[in-house]
Image (tube, rainbow, N blue to C red):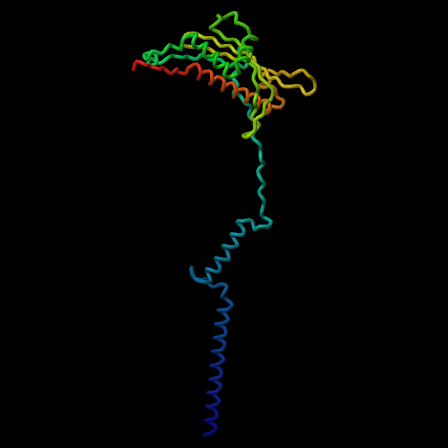
Amino acid sequence: MKKIFFTLFTVCSVAIMANAQTWDDAGADSWGDATDGSSDYQYDPGSAAASDSSSADSWGASDDSYGGYGGQDYVRSARPDAKAMPYVRFTGMPFDSASQLITYIEIVEVIAPDRFLDLGGQDYSVADSLYARAMVWMQNEFGKKEAKQMIENAGIDPKGKEGQTIMANVVMPLVVEVNKYAKITVGIIKFDMELRFKDERYRYKFENFEHVTPNAVGKEEISTYMEYYMTSKKDIRNNDKILIACNSQMNRLIEDLKATCSAVPFVDDDDW
């Protein structure tokens, strides 16, 4: 009886041990398989592991797109060449292609308003009145003695009639604008002035411009015609400054002449 019991006990023990060994092998294999196969597991989109993986890939792609900052694929872009704009010469001088001279010329109409005449004012648009006004303009601009001397030096125009034409050799300082805040006098300019008058209009003409500067070496002055400054290829910027200064002064003279000749006199009407 004891032998039978011992035999059954031995068989049961062997069976239990065999079963336990089988469970251990299955568990180890399953966990081992899970661990070994983790790299092959396909995570669901949106999971933490998927996010980590995509993040790493995106940073890698980002680095590649920027060239890696020092990587072999990065090429530094060359700085664009800074090119200076070409200098554009001053072309504002009025030039007569027929005479090949710088010439300021215009016919200006002066018509007295009807209201002024109705109030008893004398017609200031007649030739004699315009002539007298132009003489006042010259005296105010250059001085009485200087204006008289300029007219005497030019003489009477043989083609005109005395009292209807003013000829003058004008001399005036040339003021050049160095910059926005500084101006200097650079010699003088000389030119011929002709003013012709008719009823209700007059014509001005300025030409033969000459720039005169002192000579640092000798006593003789240096004279240069303005047309030379327009065509010379030497010292272009300073030449343009002289032309600009001359043009500005001439425009101011013309504006003052027009304002003087067209100004409406004051009428003191005592019959109102």
